[in-house]
Each structure stands twice: as C-alpha cells, then as structure tokens.
Image 1 (cartoon, rainbow, N blue to C red):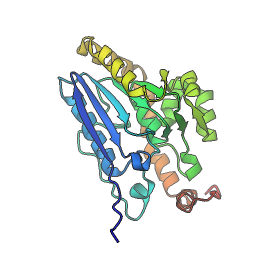
Image 2: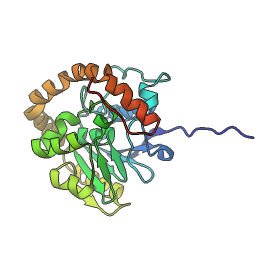
Image 3: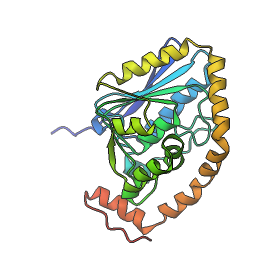
Length: 263
C-alpha cells in the first residue's frame, strides 16, 4: 500500500509585459493558505513593488475557488509553521508595507475571510458571478485581523460593513458589487481574463502617474487606517487568549456548532 502524499500548495508568478500575474495554487484544498504560501505571496508582491519594469499586478487563483481562507491548524495548531515576514517585504494584507503598484484581484467560487481581506488590500476586484463571500472569523471565536475591520468601512460604509461583519453571513457577487467590495462582476471563468485586460489598460498609462495617484489616495485615508492598524495587537491578544477562541477552533476541527460563553 502506498502512502498518501498531501498536496503542497504554492503561490507562483508570471510576467506578462509590465504586468505581474500572481497565482494562488492549492486547488485541492480550496486554495487555503499555509504559512509558506503566505510567505510566497509576500515575496511576489515585493517583486512587483520593487521591479521598475513591473507596473501592475494581477492576483488570481487556479481552480474553482479563490480561497477558503487560512489552513487553520498550520497557523494556530501545535504544528503551526508561521514565521515572521521578511524584513522589508510587502504585507499581503497591506497593514505594514503596502505595494506601491496597482493590484487587480480576480476572485471566484469561495472567497472567505483572508481572501476578502487580501482582495481589499489591493485596488480593484473583479468577481466571477459564482463568487461567495463570507467574513466568518467571529463564528470561530476570533475576529477579522487582516484589515476587514476597517476596509469594509471605507468600501461599503458603516451600515453595510457592520451588517456583514456582525452576521458573518455568506453573500454573493452582486451583493459585493452593490456595496463596493467588487468593481465588476463577470461570467464564471472570465474573471482572470478580465483582470488581465484591466491590468493591461492600466499599464498603458504613465506608471509614475498611476503610482502617485495611488499614493495620494492612500494619504487621504492613512491617518484613520493607522489607528485601525495600531489597535490590531490589542484586539488580537483579546481574542487569541479567550476561551471562545479555543472553542471556535476546536468546534471547527470537530465539525460541530460552537458553544460560546463570551469569555
């Protein structure tokens, strides 16, 4: 009897003229991120940021789903393999170093938790019409720690942001488009093609002008975002040391409904 070998996910990149296409490739696990994949994503975005011949990035995923989120045991379990991000590297969540270049993200199928947060850390989102969104961290006893707590607000406004952050519900691409999380909805299977088209259109413009436009826009909101980013360690400690967090992760592993106690 041969041993079953677990598929190993990766994030790789391709250069198309002035466009860097970054691909999440772990379809067998619904493109769930391992810490190693997150490091590869950071490396690819750092390449985009630093190479002056690369003017636009496209982030997409192989398979039927964008990402189901984090491979939880590899981030929080006893066999967690998380390592600090390399010094000077781009943060895929845009909480520390944020990429100077524009990023168009193409999503499809399942786009949960960190998938939404990574998308919103970019600039333009193209969604396949079959995309399903959900910011479900609070169902697991934790909280969104990758930027959703403020980027939903800047994209959707308070009411729509709190509606989805509080309910932890699943919503479709048309709803995401209506509240501003998504800029275009296209037929399933066309999302990467459309994202590449948009990237090539952006790349026809002066790269310095585009980068300064992004920088100027960032300056407009960075004071409020800084306060939101600065509070993350405090809220992380509060949820990560809670009994509810332990119960949330355990219930996920055991595939049962969580029983929270508010402590």
